[in-house]
Image 1 (tube, one colour):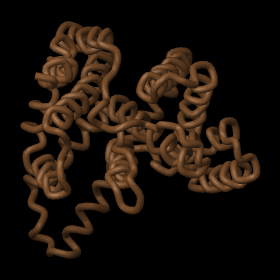
Image 2 (cartoon, one colour):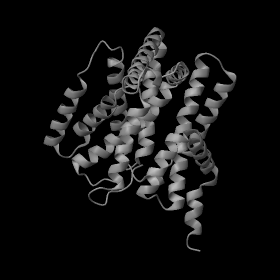
Image 3 (cartoon, one colour):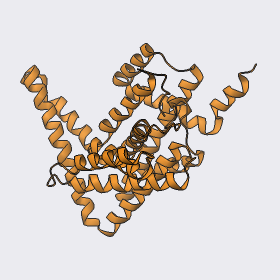
Length: 311
């Protein structure tokens, strides 16, 4: 998913930074935990440099074991990250030549399966998680609004702005499983990239973004999520909504990969313009990328471009 390094500053490092920012932006859980625990497991089980792996693994483990255990999400964060990293390590050991994307998606799916089975058997615990997530988001939103009032004055935050912020927070709370899935894939990608740098293994790593793709049969997850969203209610409706948003994010990323492939990449200035466009016109950009990515499922645009390039 990231570009290749050419020595010094490169798109490879910039893409890795983008993965870390995406992890922190999408997930309500700690980015340090989401990245650190899989990285520690990779260092302990897959690194050929045993001494360095032991130091990295123990250092990361000690770092992520800190924090406030009374926050309500402390155990969920670490439990999720351990299962996520364990799945990824197991899939890597079983299919070492498989690309990152299928292993990463497999690890995310396996983690959702394990955690879903746990909460299915203990339904009361899911209500606690929902409460803890809402509480953390409310605290974060309150701190952000207070910072704006402190720096720009009390009049900088109107009642309408605060109401829209609360609506956005409620939507994020509804969709946090989908965002957590996307953040987990991004965290695994960054951990895998960092593991390759620390181990100096010479492996391909996560690959360039323009080559990002996944199994076309996953379109049925998108369709199934849409069906639940439209016809179901209650827990099934929420399940369908999150499945649709998760796959929608993957298809939007696939659409961006198609655009980068067809245009031959993007310059630094073009990348800055793209980030600004995403910031100010996010629905338009993401919607267009989603349509392109979904269409690529049937049209296979990059293969068509490759077949026609000799002429």
